[in-house]
Image (cartoon, rainbow, N blue to C red):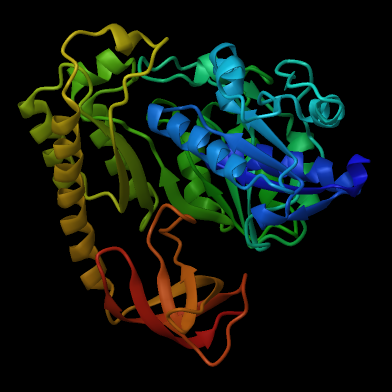
Length: 441
């Protein structure tokens, strides 16, 4: 009976969550079931959730309620999967009666048995009843780029973070398995490596950091044309990784380094390993040894007890370091984390003000950098066409998908997944606009 059902998926949260959703979709496809992107046409709707922040949990519950509002003839069943039930099933199961089935992060193979029970009239809590899936994935990204999750969980225990309580200790996946998964994705223009902390890859499995060994194995594949790194923690970016970034032509000269703050006292309260001076030295070293390297980071504003002076000092750090791209987030007070109990919680309105202040500083820095690019020619990976603008859209090396700026360009023809030389004609705050000069073979 289930083979006749049409499945739909709404996946929320980070790119690591996206990989989990793609594995679940792959398992559904392998069962012979149809998958639709139109929620109104799905017999079974799956909401793959994030639970990292209060806002993410609200978004997940709203998505379930939206799915329930579609009920009539369809959807017949609603499945809630991922981080939210993994951590909060005790509260969720009795309260969220709109859902028929609950699965945790590692229960993919419990999906169909749970659905059979649901169609028999039972509301099913299957959290913890399955195993992590490594089924072939059904990509939800454009086919020319994909994410590869190289590890799960986290052992860093930052005081604001729920991830260890949701996903457990850091666990690296074997190199052979990751290489096989990368090969199964087909021809990939850009393979993006993700984990809670990519730089600690291999510490648990091989008893030594093995990210460089993994990078070399992946870039040796003929089907992988480039590799991009996200979530590289600053305290474990070592000489070997910096040298690989400088020398490996397939490794994109881009690092995402979540610093979270600049001031020593706040970093210590966060249980982050590093100081302002050490972060500054690292960024200087990267720029000296990898000319042109693009550096991205994320920062938290309004951490408990953060003073006006410390918030201003973080803004000064941004002006000094001139990072290519940044994301800023208001501290979210999460239950079951050490920071939840800290005195000196900052009012929500003040946190929002500090986030805006940081964005204003970064926007002005990016605007100056963008102006300097006008008249230059950039190598741009075509991500497809923007029908509303009537042009093509892509990214230069200094931009990762969905989180950084884009390059809009005009051309008689462009192929998704190919690189082109684009002359930049004008700029906005974060995006660039240009035209193709000639195709880069």
